[in-house]
Length: 407
Image 1 (cartoon, one colour):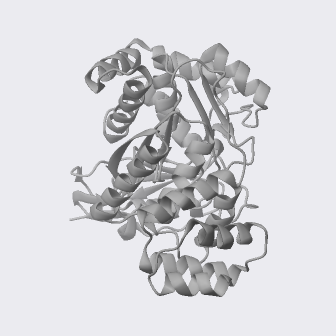
Image 2 (image 1 turned 180 degrees about the vertical axis):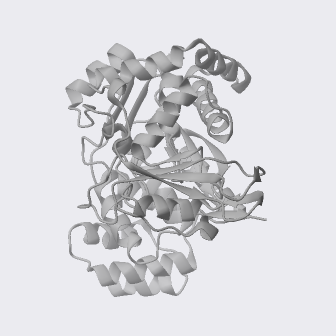
C-alpha cells in the first residue's frame, strides 16, 4: 500500500485524503520508514501537489496533535509568522507595537535550528527571561497585559515537526505545498483567528525567486480561506540582512533601539507594515487608520513601554543586557562603493561565531554575532570598519569578499 502511494505520486497522480493520511500518519506512528518518506517527499518536490491535496495535508497535520482554544481572550487574535531570514527580529518589535494598540498577541515561537537563533533564543538571551509558561500563566498574562510570547506548551502539529526534521536533511525543504501546509497547520493549531505572514525571498531566504514567493502567498491565502481564517501576506527582500545586528542578544538590543525611535531603514519599515496589517485585521479598520495608530504608539513610547512591561512580566531584566564577548573588526581591503552585503554569508559567519546551532543539542552563545557598520551605497575607504564580530572563539576566520562587495 505504501509503495503504491509513493509510486502514484512519483507518476504525477493526485492522491486522496485517505492515501495522504495513510502515509503521513503511518510515518508519525513509525510504521513508514525514513527512506520511504524521503522518497515520497522528493516525489512531492518534483511533481508538486494540487490545492485539494494541500488542504487535506494541512488538516492531517493539524489533527495530528492538540489545538489551542484562545476563546478566553476577548477580541480578534492575530498571529504573525515569518518564513525566516537573517537578522529578522521583527517579532520583538511588532508584538509590543500591536499589543500597545489593544490587539492581543499570544504567540508560540520556536528555537532556531540553523544559522541564527529563533525568537525564543533571542528572548532567552535576556537575563532571567522565562520562555516556558504554563497554560494558566499564559491565560493570566494575556488578560493582564495583552502580550505573551512563549515556547510551545502543547503538542501542536507533531506530524509537521517530525516531517520537517526529515525534510531538513533530505533536501526537500523547498517544496511550496509542504511549506504552506507546515506554516498554516501550526498557526491554525495555535488558535489564531487571523494571520499575517512575512514571506522572505532572496539569497538569505528559503525561497530564492519572486515567482516562488508569489505562489506561496497565493497558497497560504487559499488555505486560510478554506479554514475561514483571513490571511494577509508581505513579500520582503532577504538578499541583505534585516537591520544591522545578527545574533541573539545583539538583535534584542537593536529591537529596543527601533522601539526607542533611534533607527530608520528596512527593519523599521517592515515592522510598521506587519504591525499595521495585524492591527487592521484585529480591529477591523483600514490599513491607513491602523498605520496612524501604530506610528503614534511608536513615537509616543507606548510600544516601548509595552515591550518593557512584557519582558518584566516574564522575569527578564533588560538593564543587564550587555554583550560579553571579544570584538574583532572586519576592515575594508580597498576603497570604493559598498555594492552588496550578502545575507547568507553574514548568516554563516554569525553561526561560526556561536550564534546558531547545527543540531538541537548545540548550545548557543547569546553574546555572539555580527554588527554591520556600513550601508549599501556608502563610500568606503581602505581600512574602514565594515562589521564587528562578537565571539568567544579565539581569532575567528571570515571571508571578506563573500560578505561585502566593494567596487
